[in-house]
Length: 186
Image 1 (tube, rainbow, N blue to C red):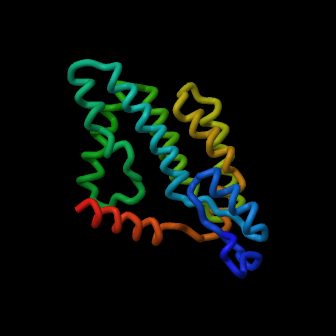
Image 2: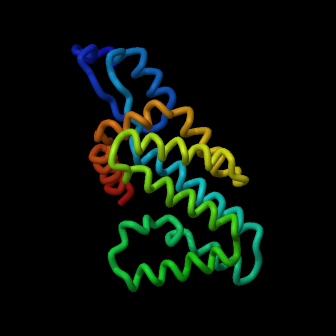
């Protein structure tokens, strides 16, 4: 950051949830607002749900074990984005079977879907309210994976709330970096 000539003019920085980067931005780009990238903080919540699924898979046997191993993609789908009704019905059947095996997984899934709905708020205040309600729900639940996710999100509260106010994201940069990694891997 020292090589940036106009660093006092930088207004906005989007970032993943990496403390060292946040500290550097705060030290060198003093006039900027840090915005947490949506993908990264959503991934924390999806990882909480998947960690719960893995724990259930490891502690199960037989058909139940096989089922928990193969239900990951169904659980992590954002149901609002599915247009094909046949696919949606199949997905719902798979998810409902998972819920028959575990009430805890059902609650974790509801927490995850509620988190995805935060961005659908019409106003900044509504998004903030949904986020705070979600944090309260996750902290008060009995699922350690979601408590941990909520604690991490609380540490980045200011930056996440900034993402509700501003529409900046790292998505194009992340996409280009991913393309480069795929090319290198191939």
